[in-house]
Image (cartoon, rainbow, N blue to C red; front, side):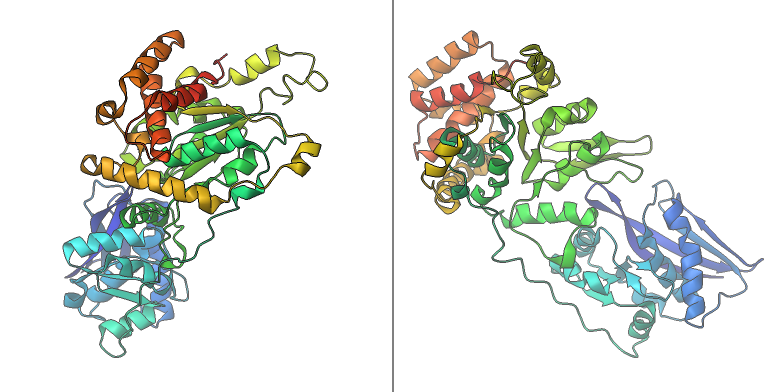
Amino acid sequence: MSLARVTTFSFQGVEAVPVEVQVQLSAGLPAFTLVGLPNKAVGESRERVRAVLSGLGLSLPPKRVLVNLAPADLPKEGSHFDLPIALGLLAAMGVIPADELAHFAAMGELALDGTIQPVAGVLPAALACAERELGLVCPAAQGAEACWAGATEAVAAPDLRALIAHFQGRQLLSPPLPAAPLAGEARGPCLSEVRGQESAKRALEVAAAGSHHLLMIGPPGSGKSMLAARLPSLLPDLSPMEALEVSLVRSVAGGLEGGRISARPPFRDPHHSASQAALTGGGPRARPGEISLAHRGVLFLDELPEFPRPALEALRQPLETGRVMVARASAHVSYPARVQLVAAMNPCRCGYLGDASRECGQAPRCGEGYQGKLSGPLLDRIDLTIEVQPIPPRELARAPTGEASATVAARVAAAREAQRARYAGLGIATNAEAPVEAMRQDFAAEALALAESAAERLALSSRGFTRTLRVARSIADLAASAVVQRAHLAEALAFRHRRPAPG
């Protein structure tokens, strides 16, 4: 009886959990048994591994082959178990030295011709290998991704034949090189292309400065989507740690192309037909949703009331906590979801509420019913609400060119830097995450008095009151003011007061 062990990983959220692939050859009737709670993709590894070994001229010994994936009570998902199972079987058969495999973890999908296909999760697996002082065997196409762990020795093999030759010492594979971080990336369309809409552009700047949630309401063609598309051009680059967080989510989702880590905040704009699982994560394999793929970036929801009501309500908890929990009977999976929500909507279903020449015959009830699709708790989590009115063509043609994105982005970057310094000891980076205790001492007495009296008149909730203070703090940061003055608070209240009533 011979036994070989190979380390690989399963994934719970963005965390790589080590799994030991134990391959045993023993006397008995020929059979190939796979145990340890494998799903269908893992179970099919038997046939892929059998076919690949046959193509290499290696037949399975006439013995009982037992593959155990330990721990046995952890569900195993994904095709990346192909490669460790094949390597464990080759070690048990004596084709490659088992002691060499003890220093490596492996993950990769096998094609029938023996090539090793890319899989999701190489980056978190490489980081887990670095913690355990293991090397990582991975597909050649993902060698650059594995190199980001630094301390991890990466063996990036194009196919199983080359990998066997490497471990036998006949032809060593060259170590892969990390891909250079993406440089000079396009920051998106320029804000100067938006003519007029000065109040909307001001709201966009304030939202960018503090990473605040923004809702734009206006008729079709007023420029809501155009404004949202220009928000990324105002945002500063991610810090190295934030870029790594974003890349971990993309790697688990299988979207880290070329192993390149981007310093630009992500921008996701799902269609309004997206389901709850598509927005928040889930499905049979509990994949990250759009809100997690937009982590540290922007989630743009156009035609907000057209999204399914359960999907919108599922956003409430992640918007508050910055994490989304996908609960399953077998496991609870958590993904990061610290996003800046930007939403756009028409004032009613026909889109022309308030325009006597174009609105439908059901006005104003159509507007009340349409806006009533958004619940009060969801609207309470939105920091700024603005009305975007269309510019007449004559005025649009004569409107002067506004500030370029680079000019506004410089003010936003200075405001963000002030916030990083202010909250350095709290582990947060923006005003949108700041507790009231960390800001209250920055408010002038007359500003606090205005906030308290306005909260009573406008019937603000505790959450609404806190978010108004955060927006005022961002407005002061844009003005390079250490103290939040009454004017800053008044502007923040104006954004809050124009929120539509929830049906």
